[in-house]
Image (cartoon, rainbow, N blue to C red; front, side):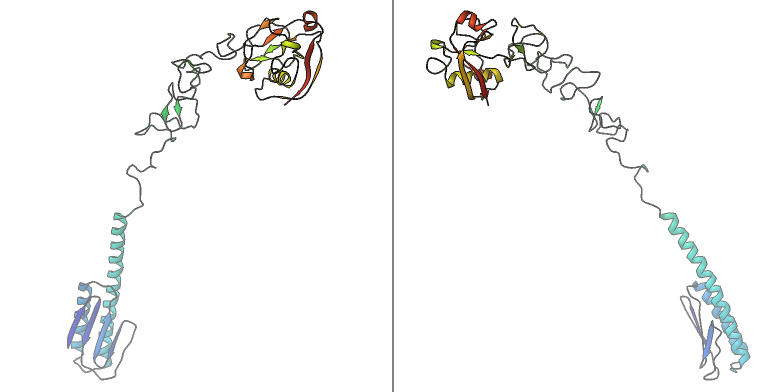
Length: 312
């Protein structure tokens, strides 16, 4: 009798009756061949099983009797059972080892990657207050607020135009005070008037842009040589100037207008009468503007005026 041992398999060659067979699910003998499969059993387990099977086969005396065959089958069955137990133990051992080496992926510190807005000051950030408010001490982007960033830091700055050089309508250096502006109760060089300063005239006001508001003036005297534009006496050129003055729009013109005798009301007077307000390029008027705050009729007489203009 010869025995061959392979990984997880024991094979016993024994003499016996050709064609005799015993099958209990664990071992079989066919034509003198006994084989048993031990699954994933260890080499040691398979060797033990083969030894047992060999001894049983020797006892049978090679007669091929059923008792000898049964002995071999039983021994082979035991070897298969032992191999199965070993396989399970080995599998459990491998599984446990694998588990000790594995595990879920994580960052080096076990938490999420740092990001601006998480409330923590991370490398590369000047601050991080965890909010998106633009007017507090920490700007979006985790940059500290400072004078010159163009954003007014509430409670710390009065203004911040990003330049802060004291220019009209801007901010002074240091962001602590406003530069001269319309409405500061002082007439600046860029202004005709200021709402905080009383005008010396009763019949027109100072507009919100610190320019004169002539919208309530009803006539422009243009009789004879007192014409403001074009030929003598009142014409389209005088009417267009009148529209520019009363609308404050340098592009305004008169679609229609009336020429009548001077009205007993204030108005734009003949040059040399009343007050010279100077040229007004912002209004599109490049000649001196003369204004009289009392009746035009009273001191100009019954000359002609432009009135009731339909302005663009």
